[in-house]
Image (cartoon, rainbow, N blue to C red; front, top):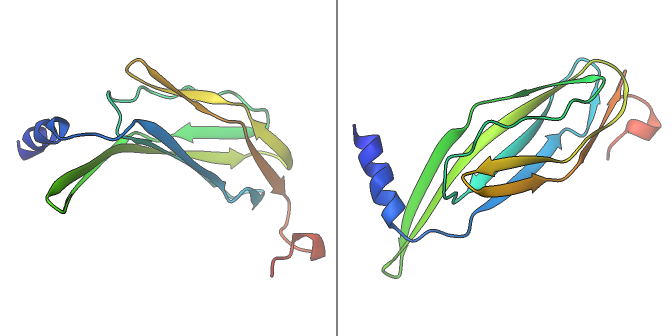
Length: 135
């Protein structure tokens, strides 16, 4: 009951510019049998994001999680600042070794389209050896 009221109040406050923040995939180098995650944050959207249709990539399975809603509000020098965002995570499951490119795709919210650039991922049998070592 309180959540819809709070959402309505937050929509009346000034908003920032809608934009998409993309993180990952993390890790971008992983062992076969592991999972990588691509996180998408739609910040200050004007509308609820739609379901994402991921491109198919041979050798990878991808599962898009549901959108979760987050909001925050602060007062600085008497001015309200509000941030409202939707977050989803895309789990990437490799089925074979190799270097993979996830082609660009879109996130749509209302009449806004946000392009996610192509992402690369490398899958190896084992994370061992000098060429795979990290300092």
